[in-house]
Length: 327
Ligand code: ASP
Image (cartoon, rainbow, N blue to C red; front, side, top):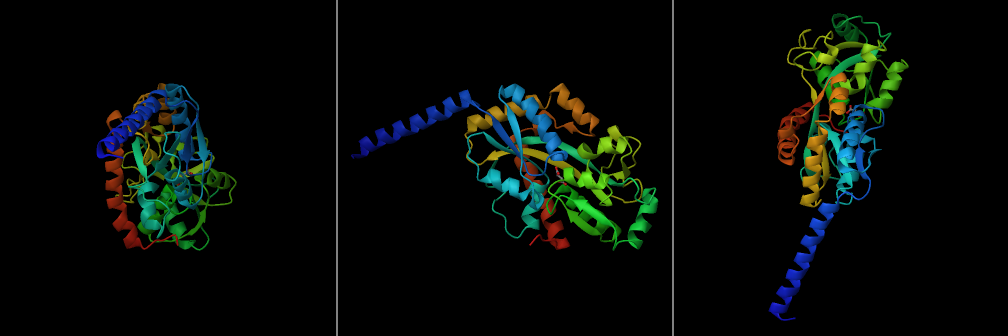
């Protein structure tokens, strides 16, 4: 083929590819979109994802389904999306674990900064330190001496290394200088069932999974992990105000597509995410569960990418210093 003929053919191929991408973006989505939640059903990430999926589905005029892929602190579900087809039909809703897993696991089958196309931040969710309803300490003041005296017996539920419940537990144990027996689950949905059944003692979990159980008195609460009290749980003091100075954990969540998802499809998803986050039903549900959607300027690929980078820089040294590894 002559140089000129080659350029003509190459130009035609590039043009056809651009047309296909733009046609894809105009028609996207033509079928069901799947959002992977890297934890079991019934937990906090699942709750957030399901309400977001409903609001996004209304905008996309397609069904958005949730697929729960729990295990290994969320990393199995993340790996699934890192390798999924990059056409906009496979998304991931994940939290702070995206920035802690690279330091907790010596090997991971994905790279958080290279294998994903960020879509936007979704919500920041406070956590609560809770216990089975008949756990003996009646207050946070009674809790600390009890934990120190019974640390070989006390069991602490979490959703595996890399889960927010693991991170909160790790920070709590280090703050009070006591270690308990940890019991890992595929998500704090099933962990909550065991806490309600009295099979496990303690858990630190997001308000999206604990608010209703706290309000109905089915679990005991010792404090919230944010600097200020949470409006949905205004009678629950912060851990900081009860003496655990500067103890603060808030769980940020982001929506991702696999790297290589066409830009016009990402643009559609960003627009739809931003509209979905203003949905009154979603806002009310989240407010009742102690959180709220992020402002529009944070529901963008750039905001999620820079937040992820800052969080990697924050957690890397802390986790390395703590010397915690999954393998
Ligand atoms: N977010 C997890 C879940 O939905 C729990 C966690 O991260 O601790 O189960």
